[in-house]
Amino acid sequence: SKLMAIAVIQQAMGKTAEARATRDKLAAEPPGDTAYYLAAANAQLGDIDAAFREVERAIETRDTNTTVLPHDWLMRPLHKDPRWLPFLRRLGRAPEQLAKVKLDVKLPQ
Image (cartoon, rainbow, N blue to C red; front, side):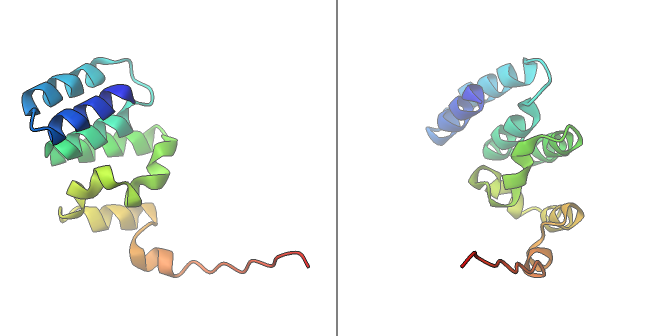
């Protein structure tokens, strides 16, 4: 989302008030694919509770962006939160769960 990117850039530039205003514009958009983008913007703004709420909403609406959730650099602020690992476990994407996935790929000769 363009607004999410702008909010993240504004925050990186130290313009927190502008970043929050941009995030609020994104939040005011019609529901759809905005939940994941709002989660990312909130994570970057340090609004961790709001980020988790939006990630939950993204999962409920089957937002395809959630497939990159464990590796999305925008979500790094969530990694320090004690809810992060249990959250990944619930999704089946915790490191120990992913380590158990066995791939047996046979390439054509």
